[in-house]
Image (cartoon, rainbow, N blue to C red; front, side):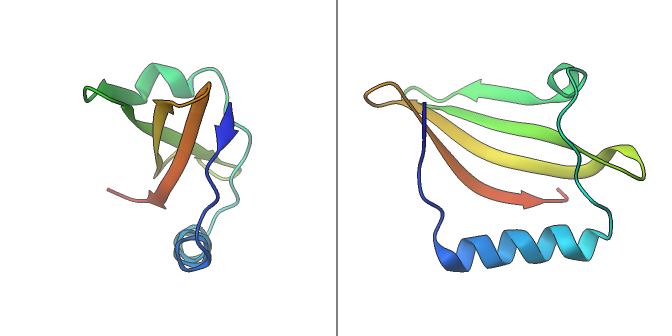
Length: 83
């Protein structure tokens, strides 16, 4: 599995979204996969992962990634935001 590099402007936006949310993210518990969603779009998976924080457990934040098969799996981080 490889992670596609995130562009600097995108990383700044994602970091700002997390900081503005006001809580610290914690490692994902198994429970996050029970509420996260993924959808096959014919060439890749679109995935929204529920994120957890130290203050509230499951938060309103989600991580949007795509996963494609390209010499293994290529994961692309698109955003972290409140939908």
